Image (cartoon, rainbow, N blue to C red; front, side, top):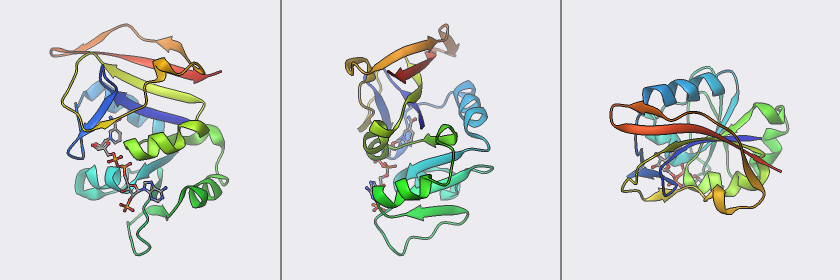
Length: 162
Ligand SMILES: NC(=O)c1ccc[n+]([C@@H]2O[C@H](COP(=O)([O-])OP(=O)(O)OC[C@H]3O[C@@H](n4cnc5c(N)ncnc54)[C@H](OP(=O)(O)O)[C@@H]3O)[C@@H](O)[C@H]2O)c1
């Protein structure tokens, strides 16, 4: 199972239920990587998308404890156990955990590959990703050159669990 995240220098990922930064090339990479695949997210992340709509051309799986929650074109699950049962339907390598903080933390033990866009700046954040550099089982296996978007510097870093 994979995860995909954009994290700042302090592993900050969001503020007020929004992303910290919008980098077109990063969005493009996210789209290319997840299109046709299964994306797993928390209810708050779904609601942070334009009009609260699931991502097109992907199987969207959304976690909420609200038994009455409805979302068009998305599979709704109500617990980690329900989610793991649902995920048995799909090849493990086709599954991408896409946030937010609570879902990344819950699903990190089930993931073996992390696609991390590291933005070289400290933003004011209220949600964070666990610091993979401090976890001895996670190793950087690929890293791009530094890229820039106006004054934002970032790089694509692949971590794998060994
Ligand atoms: N930088 C990035 O790559 C990235 C990616 C995604 C999101 N984000 C950011 O992350 C922030 C949101 O993160 P978050 O942690 O606040 O919210 P979240 O993880 O997106 O959603 C949290 C919600 O998921 C549901 N949930 C969580 N665990 C569950 C469980 N075990 N069983 C059933 N439902 C469960 C609950 O919904 P109910 O309250 O409905 O029960 C909970 O309130 C936003 O700022 C967003 O922009 C950043």
